[in-house]
Length: 151
Image (cartoon, one colour):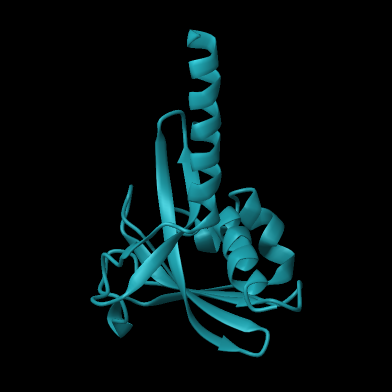
């Protein structure tokens, strides 16, 4: 009897986990009033630490998507990543505000990642994105999430 109950509970847990991933987790932005963001990517940082990256589609212009992102789990990070849904070799533009105020020109830092620099970025060896910046895996997750919904 206990085994059957255990199997039933495991089945319910599996269905709940599947359902949880079907709908993105949404929450109010921590840095922008009246804006909602959804979970995009979990960045593992060792055995017990992680950072959840949230985002939202800000603008679509043909194949281009401007995606707002933020996190506050380990370090304050917010900005815009510009993705191209059609051209896999297009440059990736990232505007970072780090601990400064979102949208502040004084706190703004822009990085362009050319196609040839994606491998160093993915390997963690891209000087322009050292430190607390969006990881390459976030870019992949955002590309899948925001390009898939529009095609």
